Image 1 (cartoon, rainbow, N blue to C red):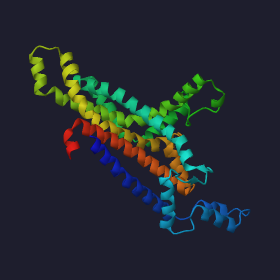
Image 2 (image 1 turned 30 degrees about the vertical axis):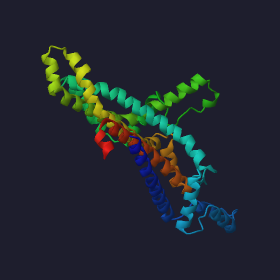
Image 3 (image 1 turned 60 degrees about the horizontal axis):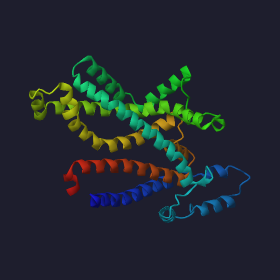
Length: 321
């Protein structure tokens, strides 16, 4: 198992280098840079702008500038944000926590709601409960996250029950620790529900399908023939076998939530990594864009890595390969 983990980690290094190279090349090929705005300022001379570009190696060929960035990245320096006037690493660190807490809460919400609903739908197959949960899953999978986020904002603006964007209130610094906690939770409610919606629907349908297949297995028929109660057969014997395959999609659902967080953050003004990436692209903040893309790729890779580990843990044939 440890050999398998080591191989997977070694595969991640060229992947991250490749993503950084591609992002750097695309940003380099894009017309203009952050200093174009400064050229419109008559108080800044062309010599000063050339000096600033030389400091960030923007006056050198593409491959030389990328080489400087890559060497610094291996030393832990992901560059400097020209728009925010601070190190990209420190800026990303403050936003990364917001993305992580939003994705984590959405993941927890999706699983604690989807699993019981999937079991309920399978046990009550073809009943009103089954059709109702199927309708909920259909809506969750059909409505795009962008539209759902806009509807959530309309609800917040129309009712005043929830804040319209942001991660905290204007008076956050004057609150007590308990008030700060509840204020953050209040701001998290709508983004978490929107982000969890599509993932919840997929997990629920998968849980229903797995349990129905298991309930038709021979060992379940044998358990029923022995006179065991239906509840004991379902929750003691069938459920354990039906829920095992879901472990393998846990990591993939985490990666999917991180991708969805980019959309939700930008629509609902949540100050996370996705919103920071878009702001950096619009400002042509060269090194910050590369750093945020690398961090986002790292999060997605970690999610897929967890999925691979769960798959290898549940199926020894994967480890042998």
